[in-house]
Length: 200
Image 1: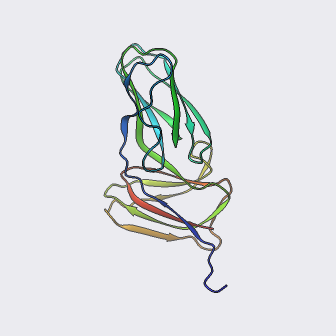
Image 2: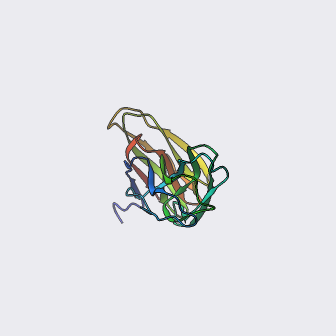
Image 3: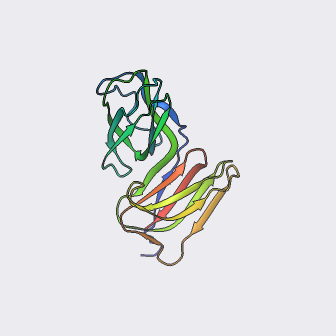
């Protein structure tokens, strides 16, 4: 058929700022915490952070249950120190189902997100044909991952150029880059305004 193309596009836009108490506001649960929110307005996934106010909470944990960028089950245990400080996780949560404390904290604790974010581009085998990134005024790195950020492999990276509202377009030659286990993108909020990924 004349004019036919199998190219599809996924659009990503995420300007939701990091928020240290977005998931759990100041509380001292002894088991399951009350959740203020369970997902992010951007539709993306975030690394979570646990902030404690007490100084005698060493080795107390919060077990976080939810889903990853592709909607599959994800669990992480974040262990607090003996200082009143924030401890960041390493996994990207698309949704949060529960936060369970191993013991009651000495002072209030909060659970929120940092600026490190990720989103699914496509959940199956796919060939990336090109992309378009609109930068903010802050430089950053965009990583394209074969699979999830937790278990996948970064196949390549792109640099945002730190010139506000400037677009970088790139066309990948031949058959494109194959992502056999699905494609996800990892980025830092505040370094991109929007991204488009073209694939087949």
